[in-house]
Length: 323
Image (cartoon, rainbow, N blue to C red):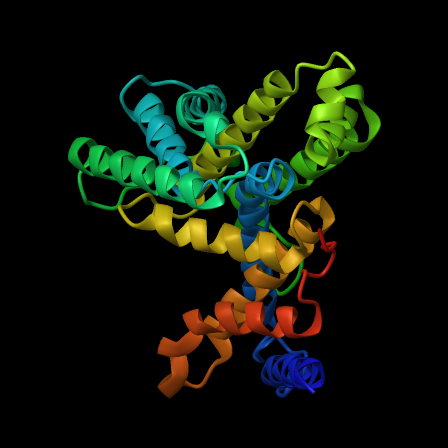
């Protein structure tokens, strides 16, 4: 019954969006140009969610580490990139790479000092990472202030890109962000499914003791995986700081979004994270644009409606497996 209701609600919501988009026809004076831009906003936002959530998928879904400091590492990466671009005059690409290294390094230190000794202790891990998150958030607030700010995009991506339809143009940087998400997904998939490193990570998660008995340093592999997952959070922060903005509280907002993506897609599923990010990005943008004005303030709640609807149909997520 719950599954049927979830499907019906989803179909009705989609039909409502399509009706508002196409009710005035396909002319340039109708709603189709706006629908195209909103859809692109949803797709590029989904790319940003995926970049951030893919790291959490690795840490939370595969290593089974409850890392609730992922949002703080996301915001830290954004602020590091901002500082390097604005104060050091560094190119955006180099700043983003260094932001990844800083976020990855902070995540690795956290893992080695606090989390590796509490493997399998979910509550302890959650409390430790919450504490680290609060400390990082307070320090970033003290150092960078509370005023929202943004990172200047690279010059090559600063001009709008003509779309070739309805005389529309769209920010080139946001298109590049979507392309980067696709590249991250492909690279992640290739490493995880086609290399020895990915095989060792999968084996270590399934049976740590047997993998160690075969001579594999499982803790070293886990440390590397945690570094990569944290670095991806930093990359997401650099993209978010450029496409959107950086501000206190954004860490918690993106942590919630990343958790929703991981849970909707299924724990440890990269393909599920991609589908979850796509659903969340489109629902977020369509709800903001197409809900009746008197209900516009409820658009944020649809994130959790999406989560509840998916879990009603698939309690383990779209591509999750019962453990």
